[in-house]
Amino acid sequence: MTIVEVNDLSKKYGELMAVNGLSFSIEEGEIFGFLGPNGAGKTSTINMLTGLSRPTSGQIMIAGFDAVKEVKRAQRIMGVVADESNLYGEMNGFDNLCFCAALYGMRKAEREQRAGQLLAEFQLTGAQDRPFRAYSKGMRRKLTIAAALIHQPKILFLDEPTTGIDVASARQIRKMIKDLKKQGTTVFITTHYIEEAERICDRIAFLVDGKIVRIGTVAELMADTESEHQLELTLDRSIPQLVETEFKQHFPSLRLENRGENASLLAAPHRIALSPILRYLEEKGIAVYEAREVRPSLEEVFVKITGIEATKLNPEKEGGKQ
Image (cartoon, rainbow, N blue to C red; front, side):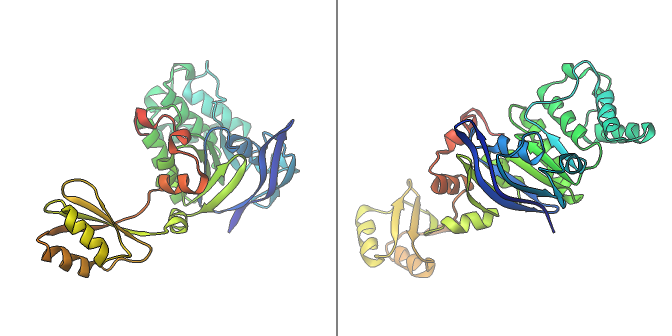
């Protein structure tokens, strides 16, 4: 069942078209991701979906509500985690959650019980009496997400939830997102981390310059770009130059690349029949220990579809994986 339906959505700031004619839908219980570099229009889109910004044009339907004309009604069934926290620095973790719950009309006993439950789930019980400003970046992000979940929303919007936090906290947040899916919560997430999108999203939209250039499951995105089949061979020794030359004559439709002393790559525009290759190499005195199919990574797919190098999408990558 569709919970979000977006048609021809655009946002213009002066002469700048930040979002340009987006159309997509999100199914109930799905983790849907926007993947793109900084400045692609991810935050502008999520701000329009959550009622924080009014579209220049287009339609947004969320759980049957017109999220442009009925903003308040739509907001009651959503949780929102912006890239900057909106919690109060002088209030402690427990009081921040209780205050957020009160904004949704929850009674005192209910909001205190829910706050305690979320603090335990996010492993923040030991810090519940500390002021929010004393929390680490990872703890702040987790409490901000907990606050967005206080009223048990049907759909959760997360804008770059793991940017700038430690690896352990990022892993906890990804696990939490997967757990929310198991509980039936729909999640919309923006990210510029390719591996993050690949790990947790059911479907991904590639967003570039305010436009969706491709959308689908990871498998669908991979299939769209698989123009050749590849096999990686592990050998007992490198293939001599003479044998390599003869191989290309014997198998003209295959491309052979030596990749070190005991590794070679085979590529072809069709599925590769392995048996004739094994027999040929064996006749030449070369044993094949392993043959492994090589599939493109989501990073390679993104680069091929968008033309944007992964280092521009995720400039922090060389400093360590999230």
